[in-house]
Length: 390
Ligand code: AMP
Ligand code: MG
Image (cartoon, rainbow, N blue to C red; front, side, top):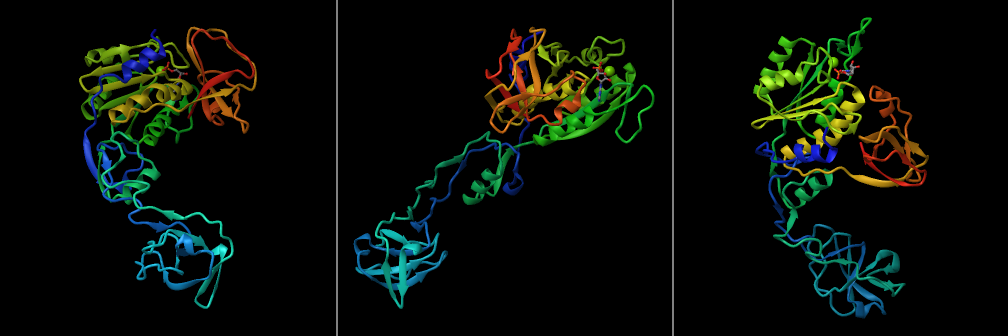
């Protein structure tokens, strides 16, 4: 049994990258940038007004001013601001020559073509050319995971075709004779396959190209055939179940036949101890425990950082340190525990009622997994605990 940190180091070391493709930036939400993006313009591209108001010289605002023109956003000013003059200007419009401030409409009275300032205290209200960004500056570095706000920045610098890492190609299997697909009413000794779709959703929401491979029965020959085929097609195989010490847990044996180097088979994590990670060349397999909370947990803490790294992004979970609402106790301390929890409105952490790794319903209201380090049995109410958002 190795520690979580050791397992993390193994699944994030010495990985190949998926390759690079060029895509339209509008489709890049959730993708990982494979190039540095530089600005092709100054931002703002010209001195512009930050308010609706009157552009003038600060020296003149004590006396009524003569109105020269109205400058709409998107239009260039035609008049230069001379002594005692002003031009009406809209937010975002280009500042006229000689103006050094814009007085907000709310602080003025306009009558005929004369403008009087009612409140002499005014900021300059000018956004200066290049104050946000200079032409040629690095705006988004390579390896950034792109979100909607990045798409806006790509648009603003005209980066319309961008290089991103290809999606990792992942095949998900469930194993077990007891499983039927969700459409089917389970027979006497059967249960519905909930891991398959859970893992597909977990991989899909992080932007991988995921395919569901179906249920593999607890049959050595079928397991062999399915895994051989999948290794030819995909970069990563993720399966759940079939790796414990049961008589019908064939997966590790077949991975051996496939010359997969099993880099660990057991980790000091609860839930999720019997987790297998293997590699053959640039193909990988994650075999997760069958219990649905274990499978969810191990995907989040190990498979997710692993898959992001294949796609070029050094992902780390957002871990918050928050106070606990109650005293927490557990029996064993030889594994790093993860307990489903909610984050209350006041920022405190409430562990959820949780019967163990089969209790998938415990995750329904969970915002986060509360982390209990090795060796720790009790945490007092009010003490700070690490939680990772899920
Ligand atoms: P295993 O790891 O195959 O020994 O399975 C451990 C437990 O998880 C057993 O109770 C299985 O019935 C259950 N289980 C395994 N696979 C799934 C699955 N795909 N969906 C829901 N439960 C599962
Ligand atoms: Mg099984």
